[in-house]
Image (spheres, rainbow, N blue to C red):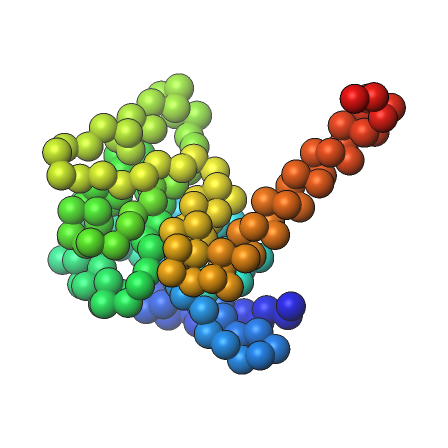
Length: 186
């Protein structure tokens, strides 16, 4: 399964998009990764890489809920017409996740980058939300990608099969590791 990357360096436009084409040429669903700033790019690329492994197109966008709320709303409106999952990546005070969730009917997954500042207290801005605002919170990039794949897999059997394969490979790895450590004991 060969996956190609299409890179576009256009500030304010789609930053990087996996073209979603396999040897069969079929385009799969996509996940929109919204960052609060360019400083969140490295964390977002980890999510995009995990999505790529699951055969899901990732679109990276920068949209600060604090500094550019109108732009943020425009980006959400553009993509919510499709079956998408939004993953929000915002450090410090994470207004982006709640803001995005309140403006779309599509699932929103908050995946805030961890910070040592203030003993990791930034996470609380991702955990408590007002009523009628419910973004999911997944702390690891790979986990956020897997959660998005499971959501998309509800309507897309091909993605569902990739998730099952991923989970089976993880189980097999654990079984091999256990066999190695235990010397084959039950």
